[in-house]
Length: 96
Image 1 (cartoon, one colour):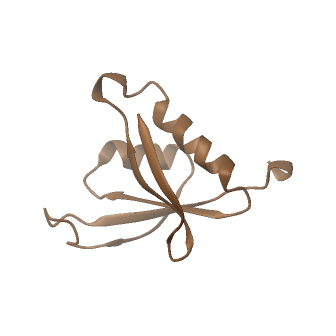
Image 2: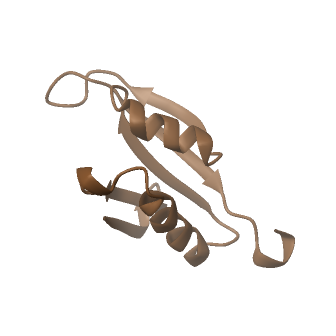
């Protein structure tokens, strides 16, 4: 699996640009571990991510991990699907 992010990639805030896990290794906790590693980098911040409204697996993962829906932009992708944005407020380590 891999994850790419930029510390100021979305309205000046940390943004996960890409998260992917090989099909043969999905549902092993790899995506959860990758997101946890990025969260550890940004304690005390609001972290953003997005996915297509048709990506049921990613939508379920974000819900399970406590991400909050921030809204969708309709028909923005090449296949006319909506891109849905989510955020997570990352607690400071001593407040967790």
